Image (cartoon, rainbow, N blue to C red):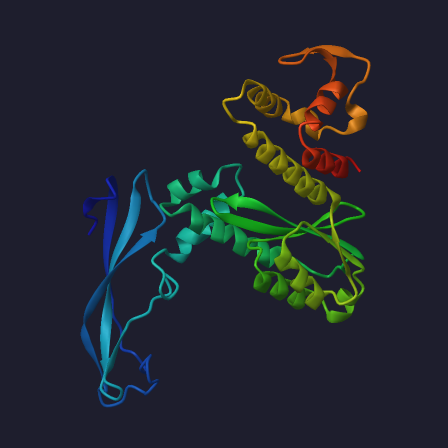
Length: 312
């Protein structure tokens, strides 16, 4: 039968089928089926996604035979090669999604065509990529670890060869277990001992992993993240001092507005500030940029000390 119906508000085609057979043994206790020790015990219906044969999505309403074992007094459901155990997406649908990923289309488009979720399509892509990956190469002496956002709330792990800049691999997660399993599975301890440096950001969780995996490697915090941290600290100090001038006093209010408006100038390297080129700055008048910064630094000894340290 091919009854018409709807699913999630969309018109679909539903096929009906029945799965039944005589089992040779119990799936629970593995006892053999002798003298009718395993009997039929009703059915259980599963809705399975199958490849579309036309313009509408297709589902198979499969009534699976349920069996009762007299030996262990437990029930189990009949199995089919159409789907993997515990899955409601047919193997052919997964294969269809995998084939479509070779086309220049988005994951969402493929998921919509195959009546599956984008997560399922991505899972097929990851599975295919793992099968194609080979690790017959050795690790370079200088590695760099980093992460990037792949989805909302999800970060992936990446590592590269620092010298050549070559991308070596991408892992779907950045947790310590995933990283450890990857390097211990694909690289021997002898290979990992040859790594001399690993460059990372300020993610403290990487440091313990690196010490375990690469016993001879030195950990380097890359300069970008060091400068970024110091810049944020400087900006935080500026905001604290700026808020202290947010009073009803006219002179304090002018200092507050100056510190708020020209924060970018305070973060610029000193060599990029001009002492001779005059420009008009609101609340300052015609001044070179260096004079503007010097004037604001006189508002607080703490602000000047932080600024000087950042510049050094």
